Image (cartoon, rainbow, N blue to C red):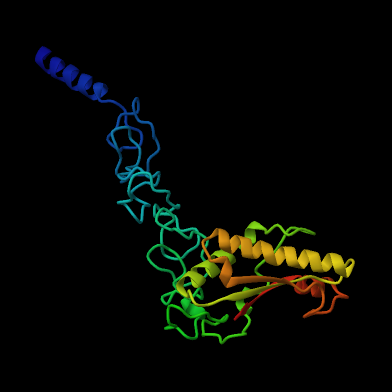
Length: 256
């Protein structure tokens, strides 16, 4: 009888000695930092769901379980791709590509012939490297206007200082001019009819010269460029409207 009592005592002691594990994940409550893990969820030594690649997304929800350390990820554990071009942000050299744009492996809009016109808009996709092209990527003849640049060059109000928003368009022109070393440009400055015409002429000349100075600063030979200020003498829209005046304040590029 004493032996039976001893056995029962030992058995009960063993049962009592088993640590509590409220969520049955194999990690005792006293060290379980995630005490309410769902049944069947793989956990680490602290009782929390496994996150093998340490991206902050548990393995059970991670659609990209082998993400490289330090890579920003979305809620599914996959590398962020803010512009949705298929190239993860950490590899994307052009993180703000237009929606639907065809991009290369660096995440930049594809321009296989290097003419400054994206492939998806390029109607002449195999333009020679030294050609100046129009807005659809086709070669332009001498005395032609580069229409695709119209409206993309802007200045601070009442000033000849270029806005930062103009730099990308001018930089694309620099690339084209470098690839087409025989091409020369006349750069025309135009303004609306607000104010005295002598002031308008001066401002339009200064703005055209600012564009020339920018291009020269990027390595283009000044002898290939000519700045011409035409004031308000050649409007392309109605100066009686706000929208028309905005259209008339412009820079035009003439191939010569």
